[in-house]
Image 1 (spheres, rainbow, N blue to C red):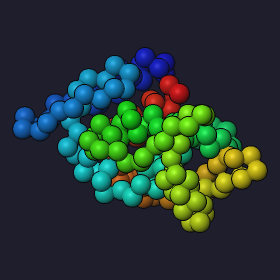
Image 2: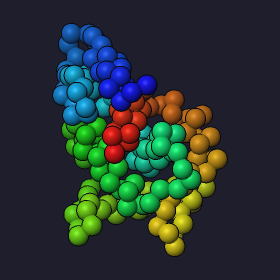
Image 3: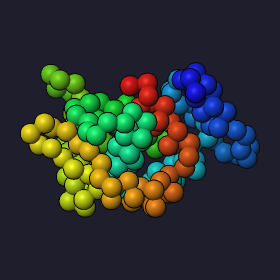
Image 4: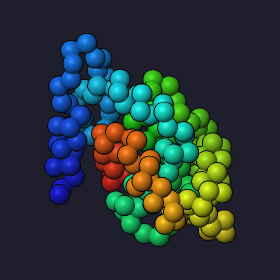
Length: 164
């Protein structure tokens, strides 16, 4: 499936009609139409932040493949996800980013990665500054976290990962 077809599919999913009293927000992902964010906001608020970080990692490895990902590149992807999907839905930032000579950085991402590593959901190669997902991480995503996140949010993250 071509990227344009995926974006069209995403637009159709996100632009479905909902009850008239629900509010709409404009999300800046490709050519996405106005999206109802009320239910998405509720779902995101229920999830702990490390779970959202795990979702982005799982989706990256599902869509792009490979065995590991540079932490700097992951931080850039998380910045895009934060600014284009999470923050517009929550109407507030989930993570705080600082700018340095190499781009954007977040202490919270490092803390969340260490937390996920302590749970054996990811592995961090400190020498190469890379992160990879473990079988346990994939299993936890499939059995629990992936079922709690609306499909629209998962698809938005996939589109952004592929564009990156």
